[in-house]
Amino acid sequence: MNKDISSELFALVKEARSIALTTHKDSDGDGMVACYALQQILAASGHDSTIVSDGEDLDRYAFLNRKPTVEIFREDMSFELVIVLDCNSYDRIGQRRALTDKARKVVVLDHHVIEHNPIPADLQVVDYAFPSVGALLWRCLAESIQKLNPDWRKYVADCVYVSILNDSNNFSNANTNATMFEISAELAREGIKAHELHMAYLQNHSAKEMLYVGRSLSTIRLQDDGKFLFLHSDKALAEELGVDPSAYMSVTRWVQGVSGLSAIAYFREDEPGLWKVSLRSLVFDVQEVAARHGGGGHRKASGLTLQGSLQEVQAIILRELKQANPIS
Image 1 (cartoon, helix red, strand yellow):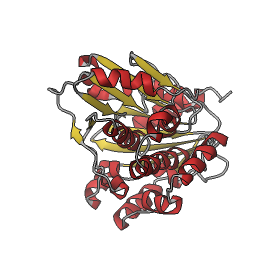
Image 2: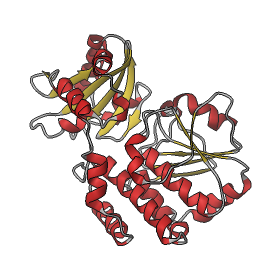
Image 3: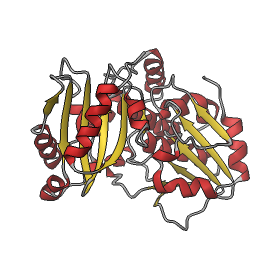
Image 4: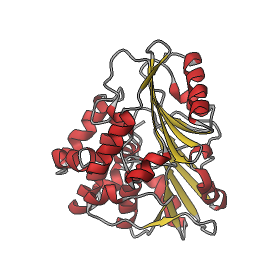
């Protein structure tokens, strides 16, 4: 779908006295940075909005050089219009479901397979053909973006390129296709400096982050005769190093080049006994696995959260991967 939805979206925006933008739990450089871009597009038309976060560290995006309006979710928050980006399921927005439940109108903009417990929306655009939700914004709001002044349009282009870097893992994932390169070429014509954005987003690692990654890599274990690679980071490691792992790139990025694997599973303990699990596979549909446990994502890259000991949650994932359906 390359339909321009500017008129439909702005019809809803003009009716709303308050607007919230939000994305999935454990936000990333696609969902959150797409919120940055959309906030700028709305502001250019005279419409204020608030990005509602879970309180995650957003300093990793400071290089984008424009301070967005962001508030941490509170139970008493209420907005007439809520726009959810990079997510189409209640299971993946967590406590921020309260925002959509209270809203008079809801918009969902996403590029993931429609998941379990979908969010009802007055305007829903879910198109799997796009490599990132930022790319979806670039094409589906083209009319509004082209009306921006050059400086604001360049900022939106920077955000969209970061969203592509995030969801393609620097053009190395299986979603790297002609559309991705076509949109990237359009962004280059808007003046983005691709090498600078790459360095700022993908190669701006602190020594502590690299130590955290290195210690996590040392936990690598092969399962099921070498078909599956498991690794983990427990909460004790984050506390020992004094780091916030949610502010870092996923450790899975550092093992996706291992040959001969059918799947990768990374387990990160965010609270005692609460594990965020990241799944990657070119062979099995890991989105189905994640969805069965309230998570979601793409067929080849998905995430979920499980409660229990490391041994318990790894046993669950091992069983799931052994029974997973191949990607058709």
